[in-house]
Amino acid sequence: ISRLALAADAVTAYTGALGFRPGAVLAAGTGLIALGTDLSGWRRADGWGHLLGDCGSGAWIGRAGLEAALRAHDGRPGGSAALLRRAEEVFGPVAELPGRIYPRADRAAVLASFAPEVAGCAGGDPVAAEVLRAAARHLAESAAAVCPPSGQPRLAVTGGLLKLGEAFTAPLAQELTRCLPHARRTTAEGDPLHGAVRLAGALAAGPLPLPQDPRLLRVTVGSGTLPGTAGNRPSAPP
Image 1: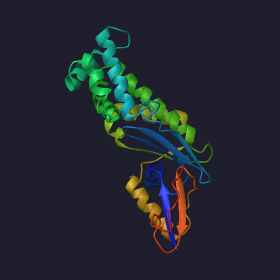
Image 2: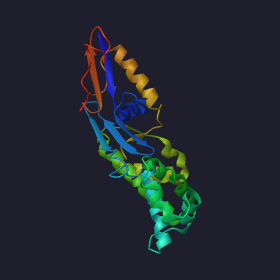
Image 3: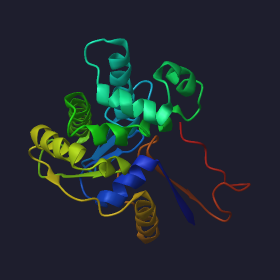
Image 4: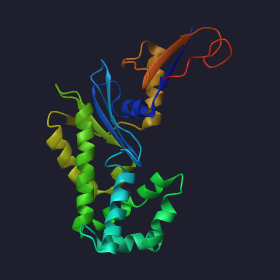
């Protein structure tokens, strides 16, 4: 008998960070998704992509920073001269910015590439600092939406956004404490690859100690040929 676990990348991120314990994980990089479980079911928040969501992500921070730069260029309130200078250093004349970004298939990554510039300005620019504080609030709200409401669930943050440094991690810690005073903040134990290995090991030993969900985690069981080959092809998740 062969068994195959089909897991979303958010689940492997969760398992890598917290293993098989109840809690919540924020996977924050170019995009943003929050995933939590009380071990009886999953809760997900955001992960809707850079046009409709991913609030507080690298793409969100970069876009907000560029918006502040364009406000300064136009002379509108809420602009940042510091971010305008950084935007022109990185992208060239900001009047050409829409043409440089909108047509690109990788525009989320292009937007996220400006997030470190926002963090770099935050020490001396209140607009940039507020962008990071707003991002921290968004992340904490997503974590609160998925974290088990009782007990002492664990809470971990993973992803490249942590590389922005103290200008971002300090307000993030404050917001997580405000929104989730009952959660136990912990450093992620591993990355999504580590999580995939953990899932494989648990699957080999017996039933997975995590809840199954058709969109997040599903185990298929077959015999003879490997799943995905002729005669034993699992149906695609919805």
